Length: 216
Length: 218
Image (cartoon, rainbow over all chains, first blue to last red; front, side, top):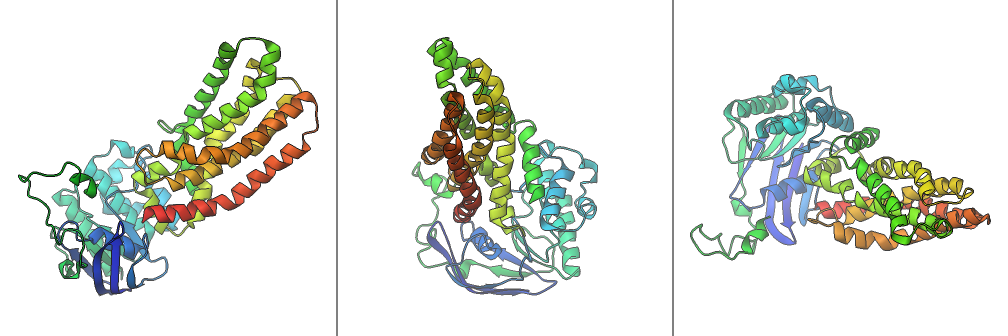
């Protein structure tokens, strides 16, 4: 369904990952792991088609990918239903009722997105995946700010998605309780990638005040 | 695409959408000019076409950075880029929505404000006509500038500097149309040039804006 072969990708002009390869079949979940800064987000953005690969090949079904990143793409002045219906219309996906139920948003239907809590926003952002109707989910830290019950809802949604022949590529640090392959990205770190030669300074070490900007 | 256009319209007129910003700026500018330059009717009616056009242009400029910046910040732009809609269509829909929420109100209120500046009678129809033809060009050029500066924090200054020179031809032919109309001269040439600029900009710049967005999203 999704084949990535000898993929190299770069962020801000610096190579971060080299020679990444995996195959994602229908019904499978692949979890990406690796320390902060290894290039999980960069890899996911490259696979999603938001940036071109430096080298290598990505075979993905045409218009088969749904991408969810740190930002949920919600409009604060629109209600939960309006936000979801917009994305459903853009993707030509299924009606939104199922997605509202799956992420326990039915009671929040007419609430403005700006009045949702961080976890509720996240749930709405994830519900968007269901209304895209796309088979391959590409998820970057999907469980940030979710409580335990919501993580379980999310895991159920991924299970249902896979049972229906979909698949998911997930970068996460926590155990979702899913039956999944795990790909550790550490061996694929590109030579000279930031972070390899100079590990991040310890919190108590004196730091360059401008150093932080590199991570913004 | 139509949904995106409608969404941007709705966001534009809801709270915090910046719908009234350009309009209020235009109003304030035109009200203040007679205080600044003096109340002589002859003098005011001579400078009225230029003031109205410059005011409309600056009012348009005010809200340009919102076209893509808000969508960039909340992640919608990433999602739209992977959605089954062409990015060229996205930029065109967003520029059009900007025109309807910013340019069109200016067109409609300009004749009212023309009274404040003692705009000569025959010039009113040309004022509306030239603004109606010219302001879409302002929105589409602005969308291109906004696409170029979308990743920058507080890129508004750079955006203004990039866009202002591109606005000059529209301003020249737009104001010239009204000036000639006010003096009863034929307006065919500047009006045709203005329409030509608008059509070319509307046809070509969505593609340039989409290309700029693709680079900025990397």
